[in-house]
Amino acid sequence: MSAKIRLARAGAKKKPFYRIVVTDRRNQRDGQFLEMVGTYDPMKKPSEIRLKVDRIKHWLSHGVKPTDTVARLIKEHGLVEPPTQA
Image 1 (cartoon, rainbow, N blue to C red):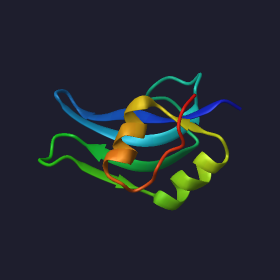
Image 2: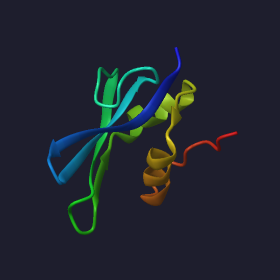
Image 3: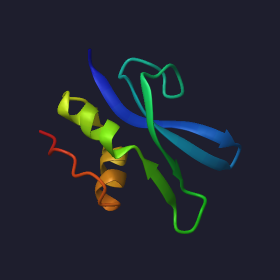
Image 4: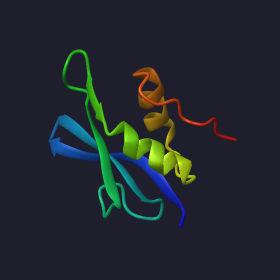
């Protein structure tokens, strides 16, 4: 399985809200996912991020790679240090 941790958009038009999900990389952006591991709300000032740290660590230990944006969010908030990507 080639999974990714990435953002899935939700929310209304011009009011984005994102779920941070683990999904097969071949699925659509807002399609089926394996597990929701957090949320990201860029509309709040400062932006609000909620992560299930234990579940993210679990998936990272199983070789699932985050997208660049998710890796930045994780590192920026200091909750989990993602592995370096090759």
